[in-house]
Image (cartoon, rainbow, N blue to C red; front, side):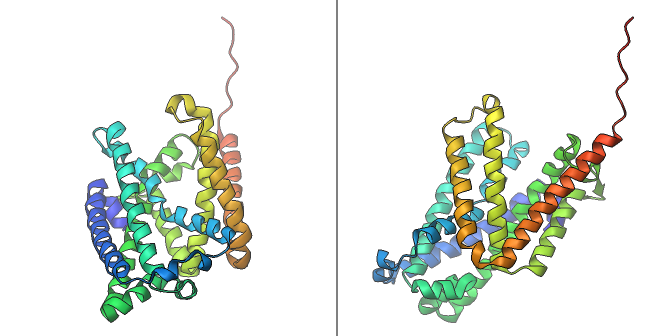
Length: 299
């Protein structure tokens, strides 16, 4: 995926289109066959978990929708981003939400909630087995691999332009504006972090850490956006709602999910502390390295 992003945005777009098309076709097929044979009694409200757990699960759903933030990084590659970006975002939200809801209905209409929790990451594959047999299980595993590949690809894509821009404005060290051949430094750093997460954390921990960090980042963006609202034309109503929703979800997520995952909670705190420390050290070093400004002299 790093090599693909190093080639350029056109290669990323073509491969990503193939991946997304394959995943959508299989998920739609899965939703149709499971809903056609579901047991509506399994969807009864009496089987719902506590409301706090439902709100906490929104954090993981939020993580699944992070790709819509990545869409904005394509603006530089679009001929008319002012019109194309809003259309792309709303159309993608409509398609993704419809497919997600249909798949969820198919899973929970096929398996009891306890089984869904027990199977965890393989719940979709297990739900496909009663209808499609072992072939359905294998098909959903392949779909998960395609989906993960697409997510990694989408996550690496904005790292190039974002880190280079932050290096130019002095928010990141100049190192991030450099390249090793065709590989920008930001891309290599992001790929290295992805490898570390995959090697040392399980899937649930990665999702929890990613969800918590994303909620904090987007909440901070909502607060900072108020300062430039006049330039962006953002709604004064939507921004506070977004801030309250993200912070509220984060608090409930921490008091429900992360309480049961102490190792993940400590990893999250360590990541935040390390990020703040690196930022403070870099900013202090950058200030010291700036040459003093000579005082103006009168003519």
